[in-house]
Amino acid sequence: MRAHRSLGLFLLASFIGAGTEAHASPAEERPLRLLLTSDDGINGSGLRLLRDTLCAAGHQVTVVAPATDRSGSSGALSLNVYLRATRSEFSCGATTGEAWAVTGMPSDSVLFGLSAVLGDVPPDLVISGMNSGQNVGRAVNHSGTVGAAVTAAEEGVPAMAVSISIHMQDASTGFSQTGAAAPHAAAFVQELLAQLRDTARPGEPLLPDRVALNVNYPVVLDAEGKFAPALVRSPRVTSVGHGEVVRARYYPVDANGIYLAAGHICGLDIQCAPETEKDADTTALEQGAISITPLSVDGSASPGQGWLKSRLRRP
Image 1: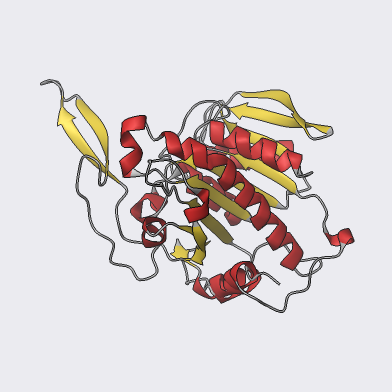
Image 2: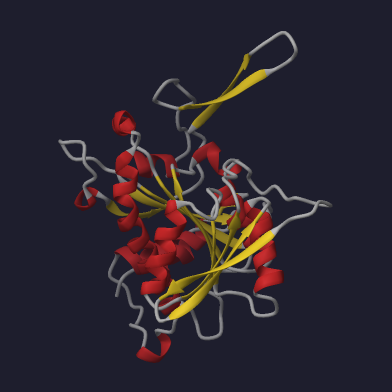
């Protein structure tokens, strides 16, 4: 998949600059039909927080997610096997929402949700997340969070992946400040959805065809090592970087061919490939800025950033 560059200018302009877009009328401020998933599973804390935030904003939310953690599964599908889907309900504002736990991958959950749950009426947007840990650089290709969003976009449904970074200086607390940042990240997603809705042309989808957004929210610490929302910088439209987030290493356990597959966090216990890409998602996070990367899911051409920067401009 490739970063969509001309798409990017369109989004960023409506969010961070003074533009010419008109405010939406009350009639346009309609609730959105949303399908949520997560590679952390149906009980992932990030998914539940985002679900509750979007329900409180009045949106119609359906959750379909793996029954267990399926991190790192990219866009893998379970084919020619039996899957179990368990239905439950949750309070969603003044209504009741549906949740389905699927014994498959994140991409299975998206396809099951679109076909078996929502049927002939697709959602306005599929959101995958919120993931604990950034999905930038080389990690984008391996992420189940991003893979689920790409799967939705392949089906012609607008989609977004959302992740919250970890900060190396927060490692001693078990990256507790990623959790502290989560409500702020959810609020940003809510604001971004409103911006996409209010800048979409009548009758058109929230995003261009076959394009997904990869959103990464930074954890910025103050002098005391606490998350400081005031230090989070404005969104940047970025490209997929070349830097590493996690490096896999394989250690022999015995003489019978058993190995331990270990994932080392770059910058914590191993040094990895540095960033070489201009305007990279990895660089934006390191500088404390929200990263929004448009991804073209067919891989045939760069989707561009111009449209995205325009639509992110605040009137």
